[in-house]
Length: 321
Image (cartoon, rainbow, N blue to C red; front, side, top):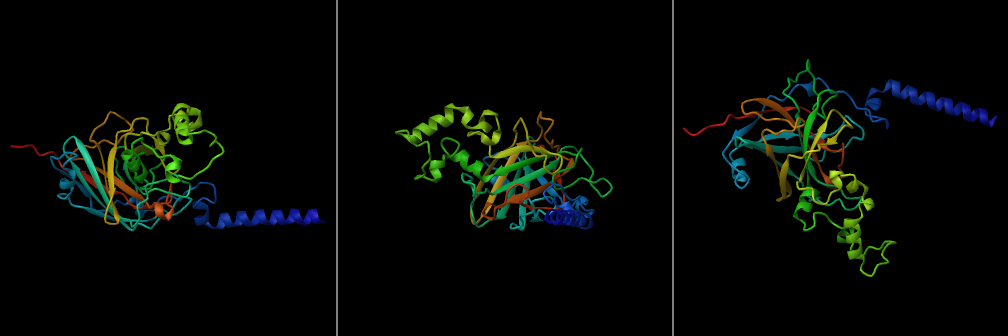
């Protein structure tokens, strides 16, 4: 009798779950642990009317801050990421972006409010501040009739993403390019502290035995101590497809000041990498953005986002007469 009751209970539970999934599109679309995502709405496939004008100014990295002051900002409202599981973010409400190019290199500047500086991820409860910039890989038309998801691209419609990370900025400023656990926890103890000079021993171990770090041995960029950049150059064709490029072309710099971040990302207008977006003065493309607030536990898909593409127009080069 008990076995029959348990069997019936399981049947009723399974039937209830299937009924819930069948009758609640929102629950199913947000994953229910399956990794599924909702399709972009009609509104999301209508780009914003106001474009970011990337102003032509004969400037270089040393004078780019002054050049940005001459470029008109575009303010974007942000919201929580609510299409793919797990949802989250929304603590950053707005972002200001400017663009400048000098005929050979393009620069983007981002400013947003953030009361806390989160640039360490050395412990599992710490998360970084970050900003992402996304472009369609090709020259495209975006409309409800020619949809192109503004969130992570689509299958068959790839995007190029530039991801600046605050902890990478911190690592670039450090002497060895990374932090030891002992830097965060100077009084820590492990089962391997049998050596007379444990810090020196661990340092040797870290540098001389690649098997200790599987990611470093495999060549994973995120595991390397000296990445040479604060920006990760990536591609995607929809949710759960984010992939680091073999060739990294984007550079960046950022500083936290006056309770907010001031971040610049830059790259040559044209590169030899077919996985990179190419910028041509006088030609229009689109961009979108996302911001991560480490203090609020933002990571991966938990982020503040713009839900629509924005046009970006590069001014033509002005030659001296």
